[in-house]
Image 1 (cartoon, rainbow, N blue to C red):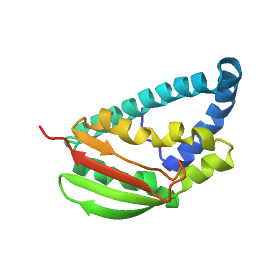
Image 2 (image 1 turned 180 degrees about the horizontal axis):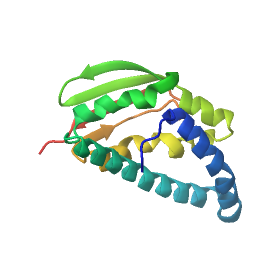
Image 3 (image 1 turned 60 degrees about the vertical axis):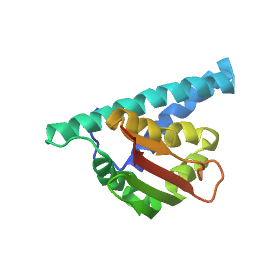
Image 4 (image 1 turned 120 degrees about the vertical axis):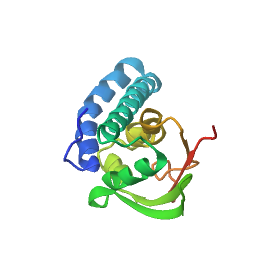
Length: 160
C-alpha cells in the first residue's frame, strides 16, 4: 500500500465514486443495514492495513511509530484545506484537537453519500491507529458527519 501523491481528500473522492454503485447494489440486494455492516468491515480492515503500511514506512526510515509520529502525519489529512483544526492539547502523551470544518463530510453529502460518510472516513480515525501503533488510544464523542458542530479528536498513549 504505497503512499500516494494525491491529497487524501481526493483519494477519498475517488474511492467514494467507486464505492457508491457497489454500496447501492449491496443495499438493494441485502438491505441498508447489511450493506453498511459489510462496507464498515471492509473499510475498517483497509484502515488497519493502511496504518500498518505507514508504520512499516516509518520503521524503514529508522523511526518507531509513536504518538509524535502520528501527529506528524496529520497534515496529510489536512492537505488542500480538507480539515480546519483547532489544537486543544499537545504533549508527548496526549494530542487533543477539534475539527471545526470537514470537507470530507461536505464532499460525501454532495455525492449523496452523507448517510455512509462515517463508514468511508470517520471510522478510519481510530482503526488506523490500531495498525500504526496499538499503544495509541483514540476517543471521540461527536462528529460533523453525525451533525455536531465539530469533531472532538482525543489521542493518548495507553497506560502500560
